[in-house]
Image (tube, rainbow, N blue to C red; front, side, top):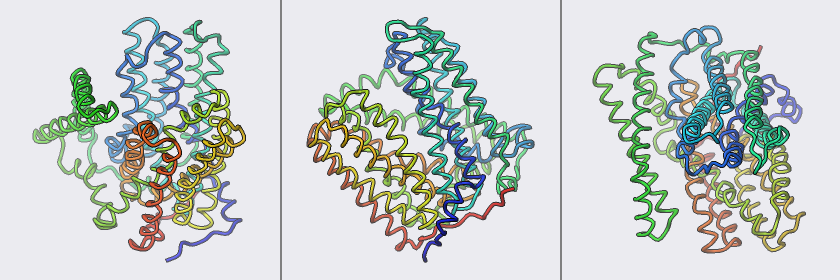
Length: 525
């Protein structure tokens, strides 16, 4: 079965579709928080004389993005009191998440980490709150995008979303640093008010997201959803989730000291510090998850929550995916989802280090990667969306995977050229164009895999799975380079991307889904 092709006029015109334009602003709203947690905050802490490694809570800020599938079902199933009746299911959760983001950024702006351990702990907790509220916003935006339009528009919507997201990262990254510097703070001359004012401005920037949420309309498919339980039953479910989450956090916290000793012992035994740390941290996560499951199971036996609610919230989305595709095909698709980004993510972990090793200055790298690279990624995203609309998602998915793998070989030329600025820009352009193109097609592909009945849960699983294996393998990039050198490392990252091409071909023919199950088209008023 061949994917239907759109004319060039239809494809270009799709960029002006109201739902496509909306994703630009929602993408901007989604891109603001992440660098305020990591990059910009790291510089703030450094100027304040704080070692970030000394604040263990900060590592938890990333948990929101990695484990958002855990509470994504709540976003799918639970109403927001009063707001859901007024705004609808998606917009109400979106508004709650955005106000939570503003509150968390405001809390960070109100804390001076230079005052001592108590203020540093408060800052860490505010960063964690920002991470979880930002991840919640991501969940809702993904669900909104999938429900707002049919599959044909998903690649275009993902392209504008990525563009908005990238622009926001520049604002929250370079923009925040320019503001802080303009207000008078610098390394060796720390000014708390400068950073505080910067973060308050970033909180105000989030009003773009709130205005967008209030202006857009609830997707028609979401409006058709009815809530089947009473407010008391939904409240009990939230209590169950909160207690299970608290048990996870407490277990993870109280095993921190023991984990340090175990890491040292295992690293000495296996002769690899990175491997020892990874194994122990993985075991901590598994242990904390087991404790959380035990607590949830015990609470279920008390009758706090009906078993049917748990089944509809957590079990039904997974069962639906396997029922629609069959066990064999579903596992195959999950393998494709988990490996599609492997080539570019594994290389991306070490790319900045490579540029430094080649003799480029930090300023040259910042200009090439953070500015020029962002523009190329945006161009690649729009190109990917346009081609996917014109040629079909699966064809561009294949093209994106091929380019992502093959362009890694250009790094070998740069390694031979050394600190050649022209070749740096050629490599950055090729790398980001291919990544942008592949990203737009891949988001459309993931959107096609989801069921409208369980949009938030299923997409959250896919988005978490797609970076799990690449990030784990990417953690060993430095060790691999030390063992085989840069040239063979670039060949390695190309080769591990080639099996993905076979997986895509098999997805089209062996499983028989050249065109994935289509969503019902939504009329846009």
